[in-house]
Structure formats: C-alpha cells, structure tokens
Amino acid sequence: MSELRHTIPAPTTVRRLDRGSHIARHRHTEHQLVYASSGAAEVRTDSGRWIAPPDRAIWIPAGSWHEHQFYGPTRFHLVAFPSERSRDWAVPTVVATTPLMRELVIACSVSQELPAAEHERMQQVLLDQLRRSPRQQLQLPAARDERLRQACAQVEQDLSVTWTLAELARRAGAGERTLTRLFRTELGMTYPQWRTQLRLHNAVRLLAEGLPVTTVAHRCGWATASAFIDVYRATLGHTPGRSHPRT
Image 1: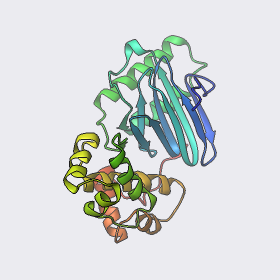
Image 2: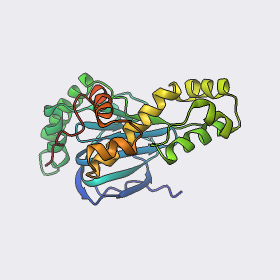
Image 3: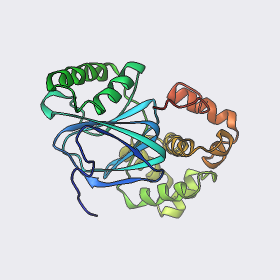
Image 4: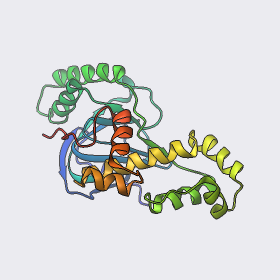
C-alpha cells in the first residue's frame, strides 16, 4: 500500500467529497480533528476502524498512519493542532460534538485568512471543549489471530445472517472457548458486543448513504426496526431517523 503524506491540500481545511471518496494511507506531524458535517467519515489504521456521523468527530494523533473512507455526499472539515498543545490520546478516538464544538470546528476549518493569534485562540477553545467531550464507542478493533480474523470476516460478509459462536468456531478451526477468549483478549469485547458494534458501524455507513431506517435495520441484522432504533438511541443518544446537521 502506498504511504502518502498530506493528501489533503492544507493542514486545516474543508472539502466537499462525493460518496465513496477515499484518501490514501498517510500520516501527519500534527494532531488532527476530522469532522463530517454531512455524510460520514471513517478512519482506518492497522489497529482498527473508527466512524463518525455528523454529531461525532474523530481525533487522529500525530504520526499515526491512517486512511479515510467517506459515505454519502460529505462535507469534510479538518483542523490541525501542533502536537505540543494537544490531547494525549495515543490512538484515533471518536468524540461527541456539542453544538459549540461543531461551530468551532467549522470556523477553524475555514479560518486560514484570520490573523494567526485569533486562529490559535479559537483552536484553544476547541481543545478546551474536547477535554470535556466524552469518548464514544464507535470503534471496531482489528483482529490479529488468523482464526479470529476468519470468524469476523464470516460475520461481516452478511450481517443479516446470525451466526452462533459455535458455528463460527467450527468454520475458523478453533474451539468455542478459544474463540471466546480471543474476542475478549484481542477486541476487548464479547462476541455479542462486537457484533453489535459491527452492526452499528455499518448502520452509520448506510444511513449516510440515505437508506431508509427499516432497510438499514434489516441489512445490519436486527429483527425489527424498533430493536435497531432502541440500540442506536442507547449508543448515540438519538434515533437514526433524526435529520443530520448540514452546512
């Protein structure tokens, strides 16, 4: 895979991207906060995937090799922070965006013409808000063990099929107890917890593409739309049918 650096034209910027857009693997000397005010942005690294709808943002630490995938027509905002004055998160992190944070991100991403001191003050307020923003569970850790990778890939092929752990273990050539242990040690979750995270991750993608809630629920493996809505609301704090903010 090519290792491109700074495929985005400026360290602090805003772009309009078509659905399915991709930014190749790269890294930055500064920390970055990425935010999609429409559509959805996904960050991928060797250790996992993080996704953010328009009420979430993703912190990317300096020096972290990563790539981006976008779902739905996306307005993509990026704010860069000098590494010495930023958060100490060692891996990409999804955070909730309050209305104030959202406006600060948008303002900082289009503030290249402002005096440097004014731009830095806005960034500092944004960092202060980030310190108060709770981390969000919208991460899919990457499996390392080949048996676990096979089991995860089997589930991801078609989320409408509900695999038992015993069935996955047989297909992956592992014992059920071994696979149970691998989910906990490598992914930090039980199999049902990981499957729910996977379903939510894909639901965010499909909703950004404009699919109806009922269709998303079926494709992601929920028995009913109401069951999907309950899980989505419990995780993200609102129903999947709520209109996303746009700029």
